[in-house]
Length: 95
Image 1 (tube, rainbow, N blue to C red):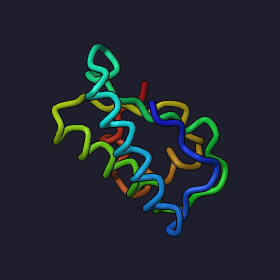
Image 2: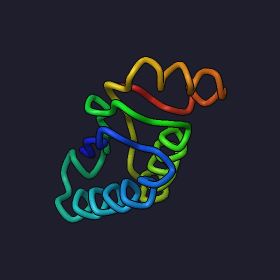
Image 3: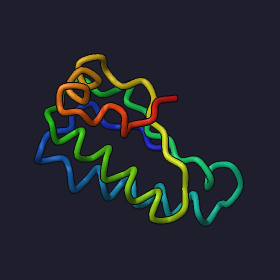
C-alpha cells in the first residue's frame, strides 16, 4: 500500500510517482495478495490540486501495466468532487 503524502501539487508529482514505483516493485518481489492488489491510501492528503488526480491515474496505469489490480481509499471529499468534475471519478476504484 502507498500512503499518499499530505501535499500533492505539481512539484510533488515526480516524488510520489517514484514512491509508487518502489511500492509496485516491492509488492511484485514479495508476491502474495500485496502483489495482486495495490492500494493507494489518501487519508493523510490535505493539500492538493488537479495534479493529485493525474498521479492517481498514472499509478493505476502503472499497476495495470504490471498486471496488478488497483484501488484507492480514503480520498478527501474535495478530491473526489474534483474527480467527478473532470469526469474521471469512474476510473478510480475506491475501496
